[in-house]
Length: 410
Image (cartoon, rainbow, N blue to C red; front, side):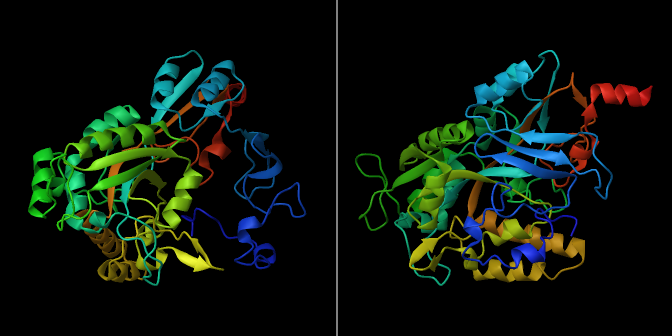
């Protein structure tokens, strides 16, 4: 229960909100209902697109925080975020781009942290888009249903190069879908890793019958359809755009014609829901308990229909394997941590062997703060994890001004 990302919710509020109306439920202090919570800070003011303002809860059961309040502000560009921190207009900056992070490192009054984080980015494949009941949807390329094609793609992508070029070296090459920060649950393929090998990738496709035509583009084994694939990148992420460009170049070298298109995350969500894609770049933040992440590959989490409209489930690859689903059900009932961890790793190995995702990298969260103003941040995990945006409220309760910290020592 202490690992829940969403804490227990008040029944007297949420029992009155139907499944259909939850998407439009405001829960906004400017509306009819004020948000209900029991954390160390309480939301007191919100202006859409400008800020969220929270005030300290002096009666918090774990002890009142040292700060009077916290304000969250969104920024339209990485450069604007950086300038606001430099000028002291804000005190903390999260999810910095690598070049911005490097430029801030060593600046007076600013401390930068390349923090270990429980998240990954991936290249996802349309493995046969369908509704949860198995009804086919979308227009994905049939070649991606073939595990051998996905494995060839895995061999054609240089993960070490992506870590350097897409995220400035602030991360590690990918493997299983549970990040290595969760050491007891993480699957490391080790010697079975899909090594970067264009010759191996070409050989796999040749052996599977995907021959190159006179134009160098491969076709389906029956010769009827070229392997021309769409690869979507996210406009909000420079790392996503960089990854997509490099992946396209590598895949072109093995006879796949890749067209990269950059779209917003909202547009990509819609395309995924209806199965109208071939490949895309995105990522996940993974909770300490693996159940949620593992559920995203189950058959029942594929898209579904409601009032005649196709809506997205948690699955964005449409991977569906009854053997995997059986293991998912098994791990939900295992109370011995070691036994459950073994099942979780077995599931990740199955996904890796089937190439359910090509996990490109586990990225660090690049953070910076005004160390001339604030101190007391707590890493999660210790000693090199994130300072804020943690599983819990540790730093928010521990942070204090430099002046207050000095006075407490006096």
